[in-house]
Structures are given as C-alpha cells and as structure tokens.
Length: 265
Image 1 (cartoon, one colour):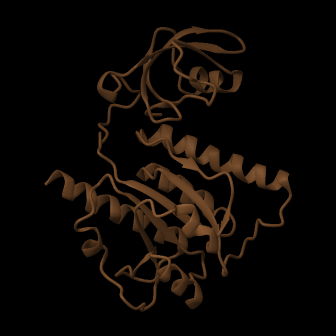
Image 2 (cartoon, rainbow, N blue to C red; image 1 turned 90 degrees about the horizontal axis):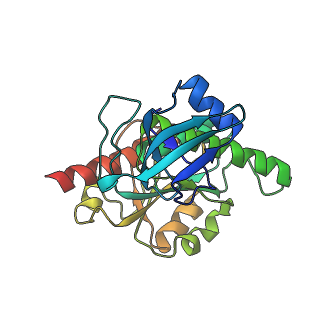
C-alpha cells in the first residue's frame, strides 16, 4: 500500500477511528504499529499525513494532518510517484461481460481517471437494466473495492469515482453536457477521423476529456453516427484489433502520455 484511502465518513477531522475490518488490514496485513506514519488520501483527492495513534481490539485511531503542498511526508513504499499535473479523463465504458469490467475499472483507476461511468450500448452482452436492486448493489460494491485497492496500491492522487447508475448510450451527450473534448474509439473507418495526437495538439491538460469505449462488439454504425452528430470525435487506434478491456487501458494511457509529455516540454 502506497497510501490509505480514508472512508466516506472522514470529513477532515484531526482524529479518525477506523472500523474493525479496516483496522485489521492496517495492523495485521500491513503491520503498521502505534506511532508509525503513513500517507492517506480522502474521497476528494486531498492528501493527508496519517499516524497510527492507538490500536484496540475492535478499531484503531489515526491522527490526521493535511499534507503540506499536497505531498505526504512518508509512505509505506519507497518508490517515487508522479506528482502531476494529471489530465482530467472521464471514462465512459460500455458494459463488458464477466469480470472484464472489474479489470477495466481497476486499471483506469491506477492510471488516474477522474470518473468512470458504465454505458449500455447495442452490443453489450451484459444488461443490467432489468437486474434486481441487490444484484446492482453487489456489482457496485465490487467495483468500489477495485477502485479502493487500486488507489491504495498505485498511490494515485486522483480519487476516482464511479457513476451511481448505468446510462444508455443515447443519454451520453446529455450526461457529458459538453464539458470539454469528447472522443470515441472505434476499430473501423469512420468519416472525418483524425489522429489522437493531432486532436490533442492544442488541448490544455486541464480540459475535461470524455473517452467512450465500446463493449466486446464495439459500436454499431448507427451509434457511431449518433456520437459524431452529437459532437464526439471519432478516433481509430493505429494498432492491432484490441479487446475491449485492452482498448480502454490503451486509449486513456495514450491520452495521459500525450498531454503530460506536452505539459512538461
């Protein structure tokens, strides 16, 4: 663990009591002792210097101090981490079957995506529109667990969030609400395509960017036309045919590299 993700009940208090399960993780798995300092991050992305103040049978107490200049004094990992700036990437991922979606969420979080929204499109094998509330809740808990683990292991300063609801592809333009550049990736020839590098050439790193990735079957021609006419820019990845879970990681990684490299030149 490079940093500890503080629970949703944390709101900036100087001392914070950790529940039994989380206490066992910190004290038994990570072997953090009383008096030991380590890094933390809250749900808003604020970095905190934490210290194990006391350990009880059912919980432990942390002392919390906001990190100076947004950088923790000490982590449980000696490897250096990138301090930013990070592009503001919003991933719209069409639902994939099985545990593929968990893999996508975990990897997107490690990379530093700001928000992940699941999308129901024509070729999605999985359909959650008619699932019970319990099934949807369990899926949400699994994805939240993937995000938490990824933030703690990667040390990402971006507190990735996942949308509460799955949206339909036809509702995507309204959901995005023209907040910035919107890109969709499709492995076929689409009119008015441009290269990713050319598209990002004049885009500031602070610009919100929507990245739309299809499910295993990609997008239909009608969906591509709908996205284009809604202002989403089509991009063809100049590589082999990629699986949906690979395409998401490849696309957001390429965007992050292009923008951060341009920023540091």
